[in-house]
Image 1 (tube, rainbow, N blue to C red):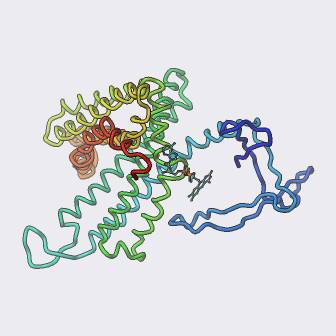
Image 2 (tube, rainbow, N blue to C red):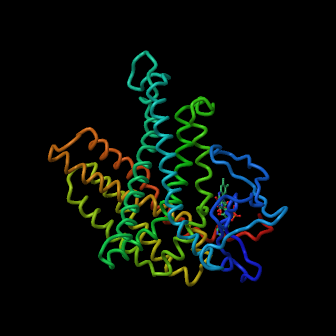
Image 3 (cartoon, protein in one colour):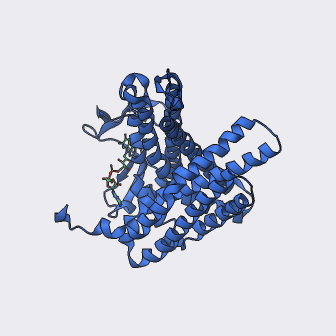
Length: 386
Ligand SMILES: Cc1cc2nc3c(=O)[nH]c(=O)nc-3n(C[C@H](O)[C@H](O)[C@H](O)COP(=O)(O)OP(=O)(O)OC[C@H]3O[C@@H](n4cnc5c(N)ncnc54)[C@H](O)[C@@H]3O)c2cc1C
């Protein structure tokens, strides 16, 4: 636990890290008496009911005993070692909730019979034949695949940063992982709330009824944008420590890497590839405009940057996710051309990347405008005018 020693400096820099055991340990290593720390109550929460959150009371009777971990006043620094891993893990939680929401919605859409097919026929058909249901399912599938792919790419960067023998390569991948962890955390979790909600919509009225399990996913999803740092805290980290402080150097490397994929798409024939390239090109341009603007405005008008930091985080997630979908489409194209592997799987990958480009990457230019022009409206009112 994090706590302050009596003479600690003010602010977060004075916090220390402690282990506060439930049972104290005797000098000979045997278990000793109960430490004076007790659970006062269990919180009643919106979701994650299998993970109890408790109010603990320390030192009501004899005084609780805690053991200092490492050096005094360095607690927050130590906790951040855990925090990066935890933030990434909560991003994966967003991917997992999204995928489960998709699985439930897909099964229901194939089973639920309602309304006739638009192309004719007298009988009602499974709702998966309705274009809007397909749009919702594709939105869930495409965004979940993009979030998962981006999380895996960042996980691989963390592995390389940890164990590659080449120090320069380790540093490069560490910088990439550091910049992307708030994106994986913030984007995957904000999106999982949206997708869990879409999952309910696919179920219609039954989604609102607990029996299907779709509603639980929305309740469970809601914490993910809050714990281990809210989305705003992730986005502050992204625009400040991860972007402005290094003049956008790592972001520019990412932009260059995305342009390589864009160029490869331009060399690859087919209408789908052209559409994927167009969406990615608009996305890259949007990110580039924002990075240039953020680096400059961070010095002249920091509040304007922070007014658009969450939309920028979303933009980064959407475009970096699109980059991974485009890579997957290129690999699929090659495998199909070589008649190598599961053709239906690769065709679906290309179609899903195309959907992602037309429906998700299409948001990028709008987000760019929000980031670059949106601060005036955010900051205009006085507190009394709210
Ligand atoms: C179920 C659950 C489990 C938890 N588990 C743990 C745990 O195990 N260990 C632990 O230490 N903590 C835990 N927490 C605490 C959790 O990490 C915090 O609730 C979370 O980080 C948000 O902090 P806060 O509640 O103080 O919100 P606040 O900081 O009060 O934030 C309120 C709002 O203000 C915004 N805001 C605040 N500061 C800024 C800023 N600088 N810029 C922009 N916006 C800002 C936030 O984004 C948010 O929208 C848990 C919380 C819950 C609900």
